[in-house]
Length: 172
Figure 1 (cartoon, one colour):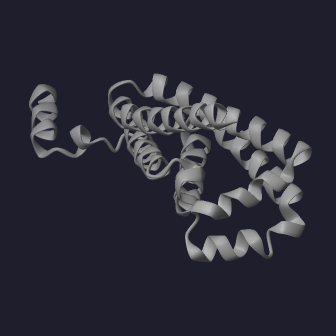
Figure 2: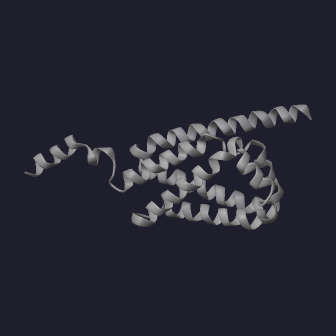
Figure 3: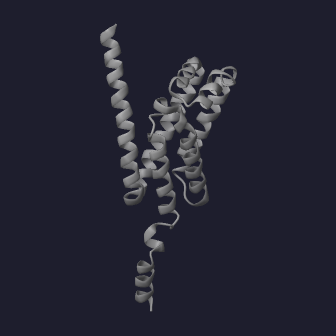
């Protein structure tokens, strides 16, 4: 029994560190390789949607464990009002995660809306603490913010006065 607990703790910490390393990597590639960042976000949100839908239907009581590492306000909600509505609430979250994933395949306003929905979602789950692999949600939200700015033409290079000057010089 004790060996399996040690293994579980090791797996949990490897997963935790891996999630945070991925989020840091995402911050970098959100500017340098936006298509790759979109693909990874698609996969992250698609996996989360599937996992949450399956768990909500198969073992909804598992979500009560999230209270263990959550901030007090979230803990009260999870152990109180959330319990009778776990399955429909988590299924709604899973649908939203699926829509965020699908938005990563689009362009324009739909893509931007998906990014903003992802940012809001990630900030909202950060208070879950270790169950959300904190600070991963905030790092990933930052990566999504960088991505939406890059993909909508608001990158620092486009607002940098030197780059504007260079562009004007070449077009004169």
